[in-house]
Image 1 (cartoon, rainbow, N blue to C red):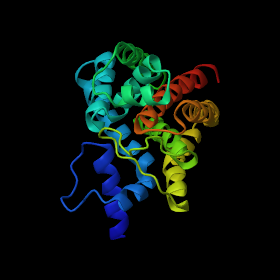
Image 2 (tube, one colour; image 1 turned 180 degrees about the vertical axis):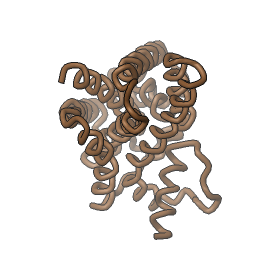
Image 3 (cartoon, one colour; image 1 turned 90 degrees about the horizontal axis):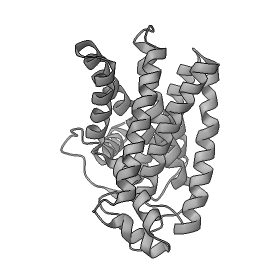
Length: 262
């Protein structure tokens, strides 16, 4: 049990800015094993983001509450995934070879492709969350809380799947400040799927059609894996961040379509 607690806090230390016990270190073995808790981190980020949304909605209005909840998610993760999303757009937008793409993604400067991509990313998130908030406006707190937790956990599961089936691309094992787990056992795979899918299964008990969100997420996984393998012969931490952000938007938009038409 102590070992599992240490592994969990390792995941929280690497993937969030939340305070962790001082005895949590940067053990590579624990980082590899922490993959099993990556979607569980989504529970925490989604839950805290919803808390900010709920309180802000009482104090202000829905529009401001959504903006503050998005800001809370960015703060909690240190814009970890958003940075990867922007870097991928800069890299693939400005590079035409593996070396050039990797060099651009490693550059700490943000380019036009990255800036524009973030504008559209947050715009879509805001609009989707606003529409969804109207659909469950009369629901108990339980339903919207599940929505927040589910879209964060599913996004992280979608991203981490790539590491189970592809290799790390950088030959020098460097990726700015984005540590990458590179060794897995069945425990990591099983844990990721359990923590990634459980919130969705609970949410689907209220409306079973929501389970259909797995179809576009599966397509995102397949297309992303093939695309990164084609250009980079694998993935980087930035690639995972980009997939995670794409998955968040796809999950929200799919939920919106299902809630509206089914």
